[in-house]
Amino acid sequence: MRIKSFILALILGCMSVFATISTARADEAFLTYTPSSGSINFSSSTANGREAKATFKWNIAGCSEFNDSNDTYEQELVFYNYDGKAYATSMRSYRTNLPNHYRDTRFCDSQNEINLAVGTYSANSIIPNKEYYVTYRLGVGNSNRSKYKISVQEVRYYVFQEPETVFAESTAKLIPFKNGFNAPEFRRWNTEIEYNDTIKRADSSGVNRWFSGVISRKEDVDYVRFQLKGRRGVRFISPRGSNIDYDVKIYDKNGNYTGRCLTSTDLEQVKYFNFESGYYYFRIYPYGEGTSSLLPYYLIVT
Image (cartoon, rainbow, N blue to C red; front, top):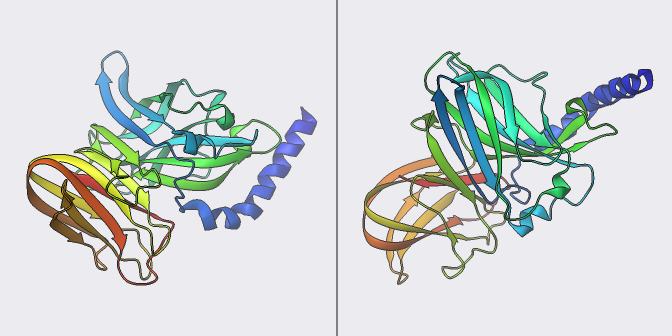
């Protein structure tokens, strides 16, 4: 035990040295290791109190990212607490079907964002197209409603399988903090699956579902298909960064142009359209030169 404690202390000391390296990738969402789809459902009962159940699954490409025995993955539910009114401020317990799972520590975490994370030390054992879940039993917060986000982390453990020895390599945000999207609610999400660069190869998403993707180079184009009818709001959020300017054009099933959502330097646009019943294709592309990024964009039709 003394040897283990010494090594653990040494690793913790080294982690502070590596922190700068980690920060460089901490907000980069390569979407290679992220689940391809999932949901979050908040509930409350007299017996169990407040709970949140996250479901998620990977396609084959996502699972292939975990190819080392030290590869670790964390599923994070994060509550907005900058105003001191988070829906939950702790996790009392959890249930999950992730293999070799653990509860991450909140050591050194900011109180402005209440990060509740459950992970697996055996990410290389994740099975493609199997639905995994984490049910968080929540400690009651300071409000009956608050913003939240869903994030995932690609991490590695060193020497011991302990929460204190996992080291984040990359973080991807799948649902962002956004006014009007508050806990408690039910919400689905999905991420892009390459290659989705033509109408015929478009990804599919749905109404009231967050869709996220990455424009990885200036020639990159993403297509997403929705089945729509009536008046709908289209919210598009471009990543922050110099010279980043993504636009969205909408086409019907015959390839006819029907509308657009231009972000310019505003980062976010919300526009309303009246759709005749049918399938529509959203083309997401960079405008001009030097606009590629490894940070994700977000699209939701409400």
